[in-house]
Length: 365
Ligand SMILES: Cc1ncc(COP(=O)(O)O)c(C=O)c1O
Image 1 (cartoon, rainbow, N blue to C red):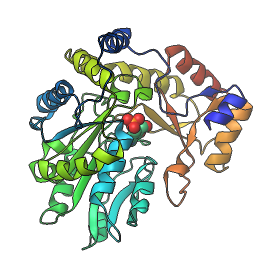
Image 2 (image 1 turned 90 degrees about the horizontal axis):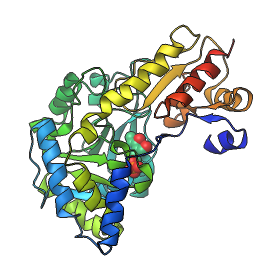
Image 3 (image 1 turned 30 degrees about the vertical axis):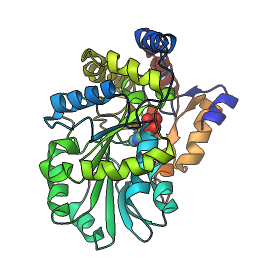
């Protein structure tokens, strides 16, 4: 869709990255460390100062202290953390339960191990998990469950009730939970992000993945982290060592300094909530159906009042005829379930959001 957007000079609200500048002081900090000679390999698990910082932030937010020495590893982005975790813990003939729509990097990693994806589809408009159905998917081959909250592409968050159900259903098993929490600081309407690290019955079986790219508006830096109990982290690091060995050194030092000020991440929810509200308020009286976005920087819109065409075709039509690009949500389902929903990324300048509103309001049935 991004290639099509470029070809037709359409406003790209599809791909999930910020359309505005990141904090210059963080760039200056990287420059400082590069100039000061911090340009060689860091320790395999990451720069200690950044591991300490991640541990402090998780403890302050969720009340659990991960040991920076043995329970936190800095990675080359969340994608690498996810791939490495799956490679380390999932093997041939294992089964992994995951929810669709899903971010695209989980399934290929599972299949590369010779393991099987066991999908559970969630649906517009609330993408609720039917836990009775989930229970039926668990068997002796189940090795891992992958959750993602706040969730890309729906913007839904796992509730306390969901996490309790999950705790209960995994109790007594040796199933690993891979919890993709890259949008952990983009949570709206004063809700609490129910991190797996909050739940004693989950955290001993969980690897939790974060991404500084999402938190610090620098997706191209590809720096993230993974946190989990030592027994799982030991396995993770066995693969990490040969998969990537270390993440970028000067960036790690700079991020450790930058995150000393909690406002760098605590202000994010208000910042993005204002953008979500601007986008949604501008479409409130339109023919588009709006989903309630609880977190992330994605707003899903359903177009059943506008057209009956499939979502891929409609997204292409929007790009070519109306000069605005979104991602058709069927691509996030393995069976291409098409609910005529498009995902829009509102991590854009206010001017671009206003332009998007204008373009979308102009579309008639
Ligand atoms: C749900 C989810 N997980 C992981 C990632 C990848 O994060 P990173 O860029 O740090 O690899 C993304 C990026 O869009 C995402 O949306």
